[in-house]
Length: 153
Length: 153
DNA sequence: CGGTAGTAGTTCAAATTTGAAGGAACAGGG
DNA sequence: CCCTGTTCCTTCAAATTTGAACTACTACCG
Image 1 (cartoon, chains in turn cyan, red, purple, brown):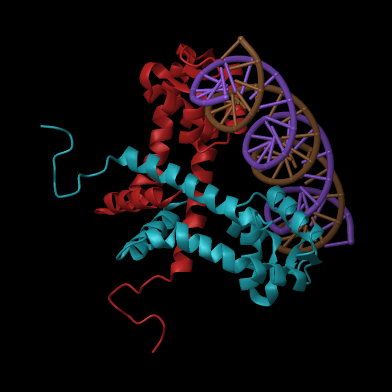
Image 2: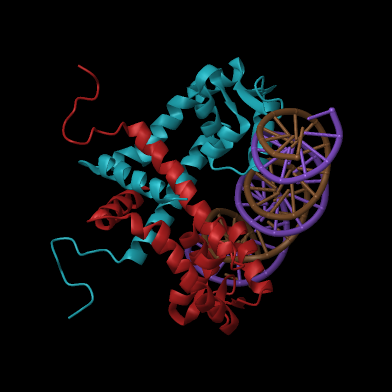
């Protein structure tokens, strides 16, 4: 008797191995996607900020909101927006409702940059991530990620 | 007719949404696990290096091999091992077979540190990751990650 | 009002990460 | 043996990330 009786055509994965595989694969995947995007002069985090702003109402988001969605600390977001601002892709505006707050707003230049970067990045994600998902993998993965997200604090 | 006909009880996930959810959830998960591990005075990358060395033959690995498995650039690994070395958890030894190379070796101190850290970290991974996996989620996730890994360059 | 606690972002120094450049050792012709 | 090209790792400067202050403003209570 082993601790892993064969229960089907696929042997059951050991929980800890699943974690390790998940962790390593995630790192490899994002590293590769990042490397390809950088050839076009943009980091993955730069791109994600542009994406979030583009999808936002009026192409703007409060700094705090943006930090939440990027899973960034406040200071990291502040730096990140600073970089994009210097590049002319984003602008900071004081928030009308709350004078403490700021909004990051996508500039026309930023929107053009996003549109320019999107095709290549979409192809990279398609090739490196989506293409590997077979059958209902995408739905299963989405369901699993959704459960993980809801469990998180 | 929409572009997403209902094909079952669960609506099909849009590919791009799956990618975004995967990306964001991964970030939240590792950020939280990292934060908890750090309360015990160790970063997640520190821990991963200790883990790889502990599982290696003779508790040693070539720097290059370690870099590959950590998905680290050579310079990043060099720095990381330097940190662990200063802490007394790892030692560098010149490689006998190839005088160009070095091996990172876990010290007794390092092994003790690993054993001290493991319980809490295992609980964190259990609570934040494994607990959210229902039914055959673990197997499916492992299969998907395996396919992703094999697709990567 | 005035005081007090809490919130939103920024800033600064220290730690980490990146990417280019360099030094030493192997490999394999010529 | 002596080149020449390659591998393995380190080093250095610049860019990024962290975490602890710090500033300005809001919210609420007396």
